[in-house]
Length: 219
Image (cartoon, rainbow, N blue to C red; front, side):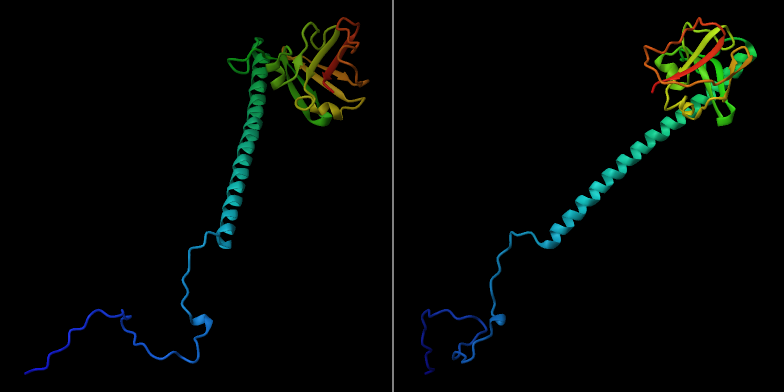
């Protein structure tokens, strides 16, 4: 009869593919041992540097965008001022040609009444009627209740010192100033004095004798 195989019960588990053997007299070096690794919660240096670069790039983009906005606003204001002067010159020439008050644009509350020129400085400006905020924003204004250039008394024209009357800082005694009125007549004046006074102590008398001209500005 064939031999009967003994039935074996459960024994200690063995690792598949490995055959137990005697311990090695030479333990494996530390570097060859298999170690378990747990995820690190500490950010790696590379990720921190990458985040800093992104923040720096975003900040630079904000600065560039802000600069473009400011540049655009400055360009717009400058272009608007140049266009206004062209329209003022056209309106003044039309006023002389027709003898009628001509507004530079339809919604303006003022109109050209004179042109001031200082040939030595190559400076010129169109004078507007009155000294309202809108008038002074685009040119010198003829101060109310003062005579026109060429009439008896003191004609007074006023403007901001950093815009349309910026050339006054270069005017010296002896310079000639020409004023062309809205009727086309031109009157020449020669500078004989300059002064800095309080706004309420100018001493200007529009009804003074003679034919005088005052160009005034803030200081």
